[in-house]
Image (cartoon, rainbow, N blue to C red):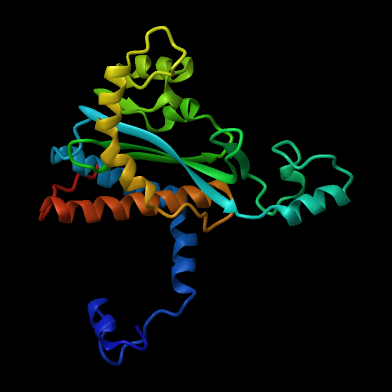
Length: 250
């Protein structure tokens, strides 16, 4: 804004007005806090539901990786220096810079160190309904309790066909539209192919997001995913052609 008059005008500053310095946004984040931002997200969510844009009839649920560090060699060296035989989820809090990050894995060959973002999306509007950040070692099925809708059908991948996820869906009164694993007796391949096609458009959207964590600590990572969700919803409202929504304060 200091170098571009158009940007200064766009943000509502006069020609001679002083603009915020680089520390403004960091200070604002600290004052607002994760709880304050989640309050804003939830108020927006309630307003979207009141406008009929989030109906929880069909909901897409998934979890994606958030990488805290791309290289852990320095942390591994610290673990060796302290006499620790391994650098894993048990020893990481003793040597890693981010004490709350953990190792997560998609399979035997694909793993990462950091967190996991859990999200539920209304499939009729494409708006994010709920979002949560957990350490990377939390199973998708166990993370479902943070983002499970209150009704409707839930479309999810094989990570949610286990007992904990099915119990959570039943507790909330949701219909399970979850893809089953190949070794399950009730596996219906034709049905699961159809479910995969239903999920595909939403998987592509989330696959293009940045997977890197900007902060240390679960509370700050929750702040990051909430910011991303709010930004996604506001941009989505433009695509949907929504001019205004009723503001619900309670």
